[in-house]
Structures are given as structure tokens and as C-alpha cells.
Amino acid sequence: MGLFILLMAAFVVTHIGLATPPLRDGLVARLGENGFRIGYSLLSLALLVAAIQAYKGLPEDALLWTAGTGAFHAANFLMLLAAILFVGSLTPANRALAGVPQRPGNEGPRGVLRWTRHPMMWAFALWAIVHGWLAGDLPTLVLAAGIGALALVGAAFQDGKKARQLGADWRMYAARTSFLPFGAIVTGRQPVSALWPGVVPLVGGILFWLVMTFLHPSLMAAPMVGIWQFV
Figure 1 (cartoon, one colour):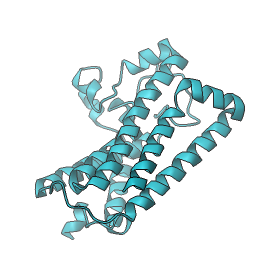
Figure 2 (cartoon, one colour):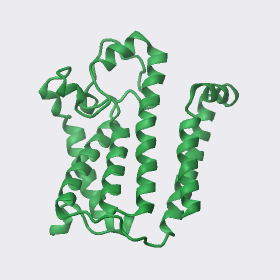
Figure 3 (cartoon, one colour):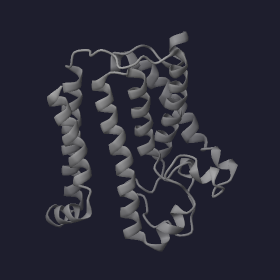
Figure 4 (cartoon, helix red, strand yellow):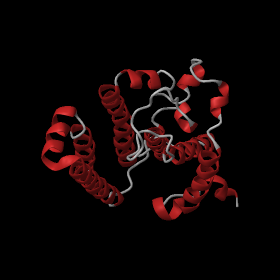
């Protein structure tokens, strides 16, 4: 358990630490933008894979709580929402993706970016919330807390980076969306029609959710979930 906690802590701390402007800027100056991205990605991936392997080798601890049937129904809905956010985050509407033009200009958010300007990060955060909530054991809580915290802290760092890079353009863009999912819709900065994410995020998200819930037992050594538990 100690090794697993150490690896998760290293994964979170290095991921956040390397994203801080002074350290990041210094490394980019030495390695170049692409060199930094490759090294950053490889280090993060190596630590995450090592942490997951350590997690798989842990003995099953006593449950801290047991989720009820209603929790599993709610979890299915939240994971479908996470799947739609994840697929929607991979479209060109997401300006956080590499290769997408970085200046928002007068163009407002589109697709799931009208739900939240951090759809991919919230997809990971929802995964963490759901799995920590349902599992109820300490190792899974540590894993979920690490991934969830990293996603949301990373989203906050991303906001700061864009604000420094784009200035007034970013403020104009951010004013039309929100950090929290559906925040802009609730506060009236986006119309209710923004609840429609678009065909690709919706259809792609549903298909992704169906595939991942079908593979859930083999990927997670966990029970069948989603609609497959009723088939």
C-alpha cells in the first residue's frame, strides 16, 4: 500500500509541478516545446502505469462503505455523461487540444464546451467520483482521489495559462462558458438549448459508454454494468 500511495503522490505532484510556469518555461527553453511535451507525457504515463500495477497487486481491504442499488443507477448516468464529455472534448471545438487554433476571438464555445470549458478534465473527474463512491475501499479511494484532483487542478492551471497567453480574448471566451459543468447555463450565460451537445458528442458518447461498460469486467475485474447487467 505504501508503494502505491508513493507512486500516486509522485504522479500527481510531478504532473502539477511540471505545469507551473517557472519550471515549465525553464524546461521548454532547454528541451523545446515538443521535447517538453514528450518528456512530460512519458513521465506521467510511466508513473500512472506503475501506480495502477501496484494497485492491482494490493489485497482487498475491508470496505469502508457499501453503495446501494440506487447509487449504481446514478453512476450509470454519470458515466454516460462523462462519455459524452470525453468524446465531445476530442472535437475541434475544444481549444485545449494540440493543433487547434488558440485565439478564441469573437467565436463562442460550441458543443460540450457550452457545458464546461474543461470537458475532458471533467470526464476524468466524474470517473474518479463514481469509482471512489461505488468501490468504498481505501486503495480505490486513493486512486480515484489522485486522478480526480489532478484533473480539476489541471483544469484550473489550464485556465491560468490561457489567461496569461490570450488576455482579453480569453476573458471574453471564458465569460461565455464555465468551469463547473452546466454553470453557464444555470447562470444564463448560455441558453437552455446549450444542453444539446451535438450529434457527434451524443452518438459517439453513447457508443463509447456502451463499449466501455461491456468491457468493464475484463478491464476492471469488476461486475457487469450499464445496460449489459440486464441482458
